[in-house]
Each structure stands twice: as C-alpha cells, then as structure tokens.
Image (cartoon, rainbow, N blue to C red; front, side, top):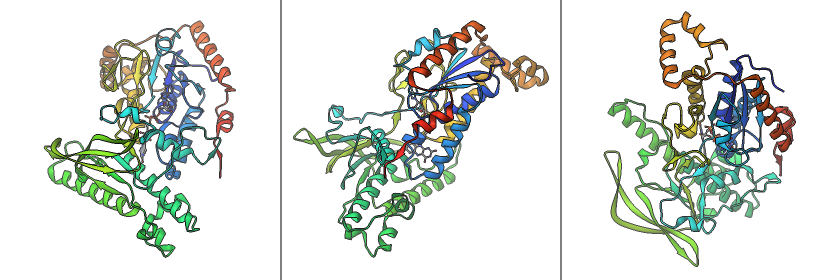
Length: 451
Ligand SMILES: Cc1cc2nc3c(=O)[nH]c(=O)nc-3n(C[C@H](O)[C@H](O)[C@H](O)COP(=O)(O)OP(=O)(O)OC[C@H]3O[C@@H](n4cnc5c(N)ncnc54)[C@H](O)[C@@H]3O)c2cc1C
C-alpha cells in the first residue's frame, strides 16, 4: 500500500495519462492519497493511441514522465477499469467517500461526420480517425486484437487539423512502403517519415510517378492558411496574424511535398456516394470563408475514392451520470470543469480544454490544481493548511480566500471511510490482476514487438 496521507484527503482521478498523472502527482506531493482509475492496461492515453508512433522520441519521453508521476508514493493505480462501466461515476462521487473526483478522461470519441445516415456506413467504406490511428500504432505488436484496417491508395480524408495530416501521412507512408516492397525494396517506416517520400525514392533511383500511386486527398472546409497548424496568439494584430497564416501555408506545402498527399480546400462534406451498400466516394459542397466564418455555396462536386476517413476532431465519450450539452460534458464552470450535480468534481486536460495538445493538457492540470483543487482541499504550499499560507502572503491569501469562497472547501473523510476506500480500491486491483506495484504491472502489460 502507498504512503499514508498527511492531509487525510483521498482523491479519485479518472484517466491516468498526461493530465491525470500531472494532477495525481501534485496531489500526492501535497500529502493526499490518490486513486487513479484508468480504462486501459497502460496509462498513456493519446500519447500511445493518438500521437502517431513515428514520434518515437516524444512518445518515450512522455511515457517516462507519466510513469514517474504515477509511481510516486501516495498513488494507487487501478488499470483496466472504466468509470461509467466497471465503476459507476455517481457512486464514485457520492458513495465511495472521496474528498474530490477529477475527470482527466480526454476525448476518445470521434466527432460524427455531419452527413445524415453516415453512421450506418462505419465499416462499409467509412472509417473514423481514432480506431484508424490506434490500429496504426499497434498493428505490429504480437497479440494485437483491435480493429484492423488496410491502407489503400486513393483514400478521401475529411478533416483540417493536425490529426488529419497524420491520417494522410499514415496512408501515404504505408501505401508507398507496400509499392516499394512489390519492387523488392524494404524501407523502414521511421526512416521514410524522417526523410520523406521523394528523397527516399531518390535514394533508390525512383520517382513518385514510378510507383503508380494516386495519393490521398484531405478535404478541408476552410482555406489552407486557416489550418490550425500554428496558433494565432491572443490579441495578435493583423501583421502578426498574417505572419502565422504564412507559416501555416509553408508548413502545409512542406507536408504535401514530403508525403505526396493532396489538399482540397473550401470543400465541406455534403453526402456519401454509396453503391451496393458500400461508400465509394463523397459529395462535397464548395464553401467560402468570410470574416472567419464558413459559408456554404450552391456548388457541389463529387469525388470517388477507396474509402472515406473522417478526422474532424475528438469529443469526450459520454459517461453515464454526467449530463451532456451537445457533444460535450455540461460543465457549469469551464475553467475548472465543474458539474453542478457533483460539487466535488473538477476536470483537467483535453476533456475540458478541447485542445489536442500535450503541453496544454499538462498545463491545464497544473492550473486546476493550483487555482482550485488545492483551495478546495485546504492544501497549502507543502501540505499544511491553506490558512497558514494565507497569513504569510496576504494578497495571495486574499485571492485564495475568494476562490475558496466560490468553490467551497471540503473536510477529509474519516479514517474509517479512508480505510473503506482503500479496501474497495484493493479489491478492484485484485480483480484486474494488479499486484500493487506500478513498475511490475507495466512490465506485465508492455506490448510485445511482433516483427
Ligand atoms: C492523431 C493525433 C496526433 C497528435 N499529435 C500531437 C502532437 O504532435 N503534439 C501534441 O502536443 N499533441 C498531439 N496530440 C494530442 C495529444 O496526444 C493529446 O491532446 C494529449 O495527450 C491529451 O492528454 P489528456 O491527458 O488530456 O487526455 P488523454 O491522453 O486522452 O488521456 C485520457 C485518459 O483517460 C482514460 N479514460 C478515458 N475515459 C475513461 C473512463 N471512462 N474511465 C477510466 N479511464 C478513462 C484514457 O484511457 C486515457 O488514458 C495528437 C492527438 C492525436 C489523436
């Protein structure tokens, strides 16, 4: 069992990845006990199942960061446990006795393609980004049992963000490797991604045209310079904004040249072309962008392709017990991800920021800890009562007091309730075969290289 809490507080964290590990570590460092519930065997979230595996360096660095944080004394890891399935959310918040519950569950559901009836064609020529990237990141592992896909030439990708470029890159890297293999040339995926397709072909005295590939196309409803590959800083003037737009164009040109995919801007999906119950293409509607807004026009056109991959963003998976507003959780406070029905709930990372970005998730988790959770739990700088810190730093104290008034504070559970929480936690850990050591567990569930 982990080190005893010095504050008496026990906090549940739902999701153990970038944001979840960050908030768990901060809580543990300040004397709380933390129970981290993670739906997957490994706690790496979108680092493992989103970020394409050619980012090997970044991925390993983030794995180490998450692992180091979750292994800290005071943290209990509960893998293979889905909140809203294996454990009920309302029960966790209201019955277990936790001081607070932190949602760090990210965005694991693809935003549905906005075409009536499209869902009926999933698996019949319509593919969503999340399962596709999960497949790409794992298919070479022995024992991979998830959904499988085949990369084929002439795919149509609906999207516009960084993730849709990653989807196009996967298609291009894999179809190029397959064509080269037919010619007896074996190229490593990581090397191909690093050098790019034209340079790699050059090294083998080949040109793109020699492969006979058409390439895939991304359809984007805005202009190339609108693609959010680089953020426009808040308050940027016109000159700065124009500079960012230029950078975006350059990055996009570089990506299309290096990976040989195409971009069709000002095109919004309008319908699926279906033959024999199979998607064979898209009907697209031309758009114009005015004053930052997308306006559909009267003009439509059709494109046939081997299949359609929808990559238009990820949204939170609904959790029974949490009210939704449209496709998002119905937070009543978007700074700290609070829910009216559960006064002890806070949220961190992508689930509330909606930003698919590692740094943004980690930073948000830190902010929610510092600006809300610490105050809610009455924690000071080093685990002492917040009041003690307030006396020393009057101004900071006043701010903390104001936030505390707005958020309320909570008392730690009684020692008996703490013992019950830890006993329930241990029972769940036993049920999933977790022996109590994070390092031993990770060794047990490490992927086995299949090639
Ligand atoms: C294709 C793609 C490419 C990307 N490329 C980059 C990039 O180049 N740079 C960058 O900075 N970012 C990139 N990102 C985004 C980045 O990986 C994520 O935004 C970031 O890792 C999110 O961290 P998080 O902790 O907020 O959420 P997640 O990583 O999504 O973590 C949520 C965790 O909660 C768990 N969980 C979810 N629901 C439950 C539940 N009900 N019960 C228990 N556990 C649950 C999940 O299994 C997961 O471990 C990319 C994302 C994608 C999809």
